[in-house]
Length: 222
Ligand SMILES: [Zn+2]
Image (cartoon, rainbow, N blue to C red):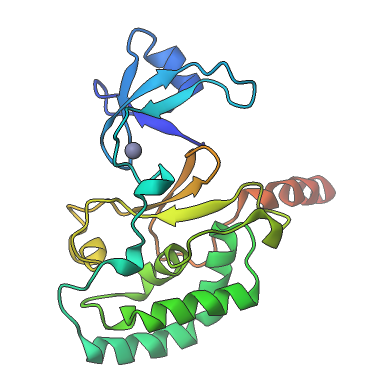
């Protein structure tokens, strides 16, 4: 489901097609990422159909000029002992973490995976107070400015990854789970559409590009 809004009356999320069915008399919803109002915009451009649009001067990170990379957020405090433990745990789960990044980013080369870990390490995110393994694949993906289509045949759009924008410290993400949305969004660079992922500690996340293979296999074994 790319690009949707929250209906302020019911609190439910809808994409544009669902919105037309459930909220036909309302044209204003709320962006699930930045919480600003968004409105239904019927675009005349044949390239883009009706979609939710932010108002001018929005600070939503789906507008690429507004994006503030996660790795530029400082820690509220550091914990070097935790960093040592975490690196050990990370190494033990390395392939699972790779698979998860591979799935969320629609295919990721080993060299890119290493590059993400290098950026993460150069910014010393290992030391951020209270960090747990569960968050690392997501943070790794947020370490890179862009994942271009030409690096993977499964990736149909140039994308980047963001967390909710209202964080003062990087560790607010895991230290304030009641306040900070436990989600990550994959934003399409071309139009600001996005996909939402809940932050979870499952390493195996079946990507949409496995669906075809799944259904063919189901046909084989039926
Ligand atoms: Zn927004």
